[in-house]
Image (cartoon, rainbow, N blue to C red; front, top):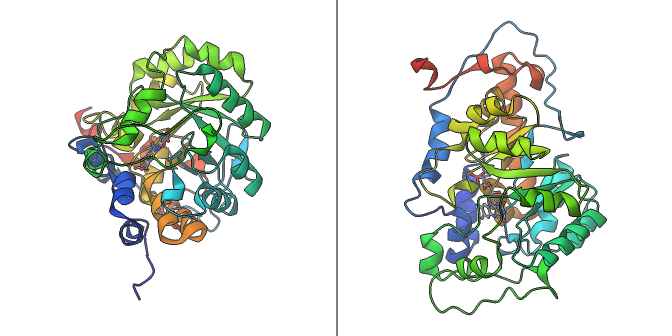
Length: 361
Ligand code: FNR
């Protein structure tokens, strides 16, 4: 029997063994040359830690508060599509794992279990990720269901007017499963013999005309706080604060949209400075170690979201696999805090890291 994984990266191979190639490639892949995909991880490796010694670290408190909700550590679950392709229990298993770890799951709009099923499966704090559809009336209905089922925030993804070119999906002729949130509202079956069925689906249903003015529309249909996911520049960060979002997620969609965007960790500080503490800044892309969580916090993120590793855990071992992934990251983060001389999350400062840009200052 293969030995138990000792770190999050080792779940990827288990997922590869567990899944049909088409699904593994879908979960793993990035856009085009996959340059940004590699960079998201590699850029973390260029950031070094500056630990402080002789600090009392006999008690470490990793807990933090996101939009008023206390979580056990600043590690949340990113919205990723179609969990039933990884495991038959799908998003329900992921949500239960989130609840067990006392963290927040962001449910994808493109989930294979419904908003209602996930809500009734656990009592954890949940956020919902939204794509705005050409059929605004259907998006409004979904938002209404999300509110009714006790989700606490809308995470509006803004980097996907069209789907990025994911070549593995094109070669595999990746087919979308039934996206159950749309059942009875919209057909997600697409008629295409060529390339990625997902690209054709997105083209058919996503609203490519979505713009800053539409944040007003979204606010008019919901009282939930709105976070905006997919910001990479200070210009857009300022704009987001101006239009009144409740939070920003620095994200390049796990390098699945526009290739040759920078690694997210290298633009986090730019966004944090522009935001100036007015709203919380969350972060995702390439988080694979507790040290990565620590680095993102040192550069100003309030919490990180984890995408692929969660899916790999789910594929490898269902709810238990997801729990192990989150626990491993938490354990590593706790150790990093102890060895860096930080007993509380707020003790982690910019002075605890050096980046390649510091040398140029
Ligand atoms: C995603 N991501 C994503 N984002 C989103 O807003 N809605 C979605 O439905 C999806 N679906 C999705 C599927 C898969 C398979 C992946 C890998 C990613 C992007 C996701 O929320 C997050 O930004 C990245 O996954 C973060 O990068 P890492 O942790 O995967 O490196």
